[in-house]
Length: 430
Image (cartoon, rainbow, N blue to C red; front, side):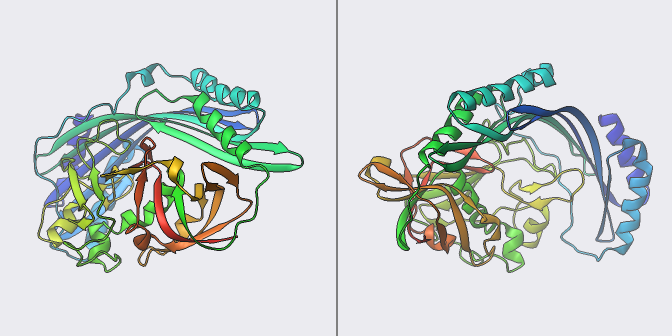
């Protein structure tokens, strides 16, 4: 693949001062479930090439999903360069040593076929039926991604990683009452437990039957894994240096000030062993690293790409992420929350929220949100009472000043590595 990349680089340099070739090769095995039937299965392979060129401070970009169209993609990148405005902050990575990142590739993917993938999905379906619930949808997918980066500054980088994920949605019924629940899990290794996924979805669905109305007011809340990840998306975006520089982050000019509970430290770690967002390097060829963002509640810094680092007169943190069809954008890798102390769930009183609907509607700058609580429970004296329907509203930045951790295990949902969180003063509307 490097031979192909070298050919592309030579073509790109004919009409530019600097150039970069980004190649992404992906293989995917996927099956989908509709009700209790394996509805769909496929194996796909894809190779994409992204070309960036620099000349006179201008950057041009183009991509193709057909490597035979390489010359056309290079030509388009060069033409796009002429249309761009010059910016002195554009640049490419320079040669560097890359960290060894553990447990992000599982060779068992190489032996995986649709039949085995279907068997994993069937285990979830069978477990759901055994638990007295009905599956409504689900699926299992696995992928292997190989990445190659070559640029005119001398960078030659390659990596490969695997990802496995499964999910299921189920219905539970009793006395004309019906509830729905969802569970999923993802890993870089083939250690997905389909029985656990289906079993937990069914338990949540059954426990949600016979829900009661909840009184409106401000309460303490446990945000379970999916609920926490949903609301943390808005919070994490504020650490992007791009958002800071564009005036889209409430954390601008806040370094050295307290922004969360003093019990909390946060880091972004692209080198986390087994992390879903881990890699030896980012989408620009910058080495991945562990970046401290919050120390004991105090803001320490932001995450950067090469562009934002140049603009901010600092170093890239290895957070210029991309696919072959995009230019690098500042994004989190593995956003890890660490707490000094933990609170036992047995001692908690308030509302326990399994998941939320509508987190994407939160205001990305102010942090204000209003979401629907899915599979929520009132908790008192260790007793869980299902809630029929509830809306949650508040401000994520205010809530993070009150946040603490439960004593449950940490999981990774998307970019976020955390135990279920406890927040104070969230507004509940029944």
